[in-house]
Length: 399
Image 1: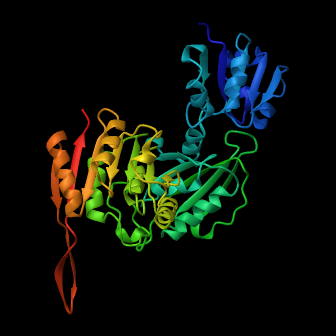
Image 2: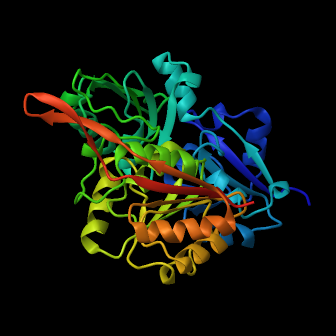
Image 3: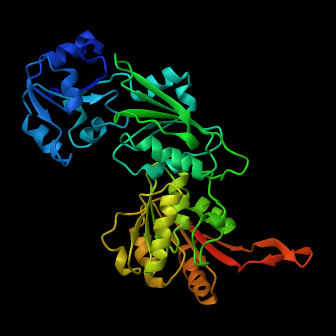
């Protein structure tokens, strides 16, 4: 089928910034779809104009109705880099679309900052929770962030300052590549600039000696989590998440999530990793929600309920952690829902759960490990080893 839909990236220089071939496509369009800003950048053309609908998903049906006509969708920069082109391409077959990329905001910002884009974390909080950038606050890290409005730089400055990164250098860039290009520089702990709503933020993270260190590998300090004391402790959590093998975009079911420590670490460990935490206690669900916001995983989904009943109808998981409430029924429901090559990890501290685990391991195989952790703690004026409760861990991969 001949491509009928053209998705065109456009910059602040408008039609003048397009290649001759792309400009010809736009000028020949019968219908141009875009936001208010995109229409303003191409206002010399006489095509029929369509604004972005709300909700955005309605755009797909609208575009499908125009099949057979010359249709152009205008977007900012690269249509396939944190842009609507990818969303449209998941519904309309690729052979019906032609993409016309323009320089992205990340490329323009990198050039203005003199940063190698290969050494920068590129993020977007546009239309998404701003808290998700917290997972990327690390010493000497450079961040380029597509923001969600004029208030976003101030919110991020607050996140940085609260975590001991107040001396981080921040630069807001607006209208890049256009006649009205603006730049605002400052430090996170003294950020007061009033900036345009449409902007890109560059951050050079600088840590104070007492800054919170939040690596994306599993094993965050227990003190970073709000908890009622019942949680998967740091060393055991590191082993647990490693066995779950976080991967880009993968989904975890965390059965008996408690304060959410395993689910949070899973989501932090891989880009776009998702997690559903299942917890029957309201107080613990509240703790998990607070931890997700504080540690940069605001998209953690938390469900009220108990397995196996609550598992019905959920998206099939790539990994499952059972941290409490193990039974044959819970295991069978979880195991049957797990995708091929999915990972299942069960931790047990009671003899009753361990007996169930050992019986299941004889049938299904997998690895049994006893984790015994001791931490040095003061004993009067000396130090001694204080053991934590040993944890029996069963891990297996669905083949």
